[in-house]
Image (cartoon, rainbow, N blue to C red; front, side, top):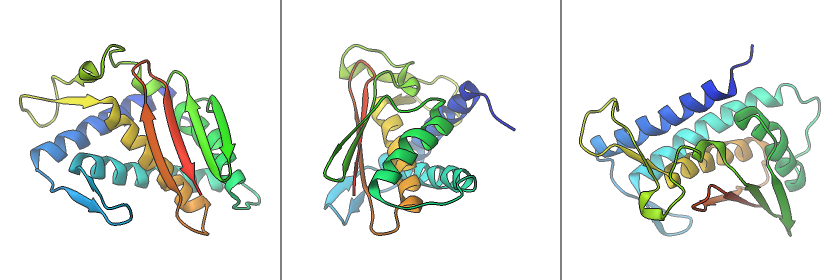
Length: 184
């Protein structure tokens, strides 16, 4: 049984909206990331953790189809760029570049960001009128979507690469190009 890509994308974006509202309504405290010493917002932490859970579950289902698996950084990046990306976004990642165990995944027109304005960073929000938690300001930014996808990639790489943790970072430009960095 397969699910339409547009339906799956819609459900994931609705989940991102819900998580942003939960972080706002329940005023989840700010967390300090011990590994980097950075302050991480409650919203980012919540999106990252739920994305991690979803990414690991999707990867578990995809690995059932793999007959053998070797967990080299190259194999992990190939799996994420091809199999995982196709399962989640309906196509392979646009570009993968490698520099000494650092993999750069680029997506030129990231589909989950297509509803956002392409102007300045100040107008990069989608306003939500019928959010589950009624309030004044319900908006989701590009960075919220990228944080969720970073969490999904962390969940995928956690299962695929057992030698150590993989650092995953993500960013997006105003025109919708996204850049994810996997550091092994």
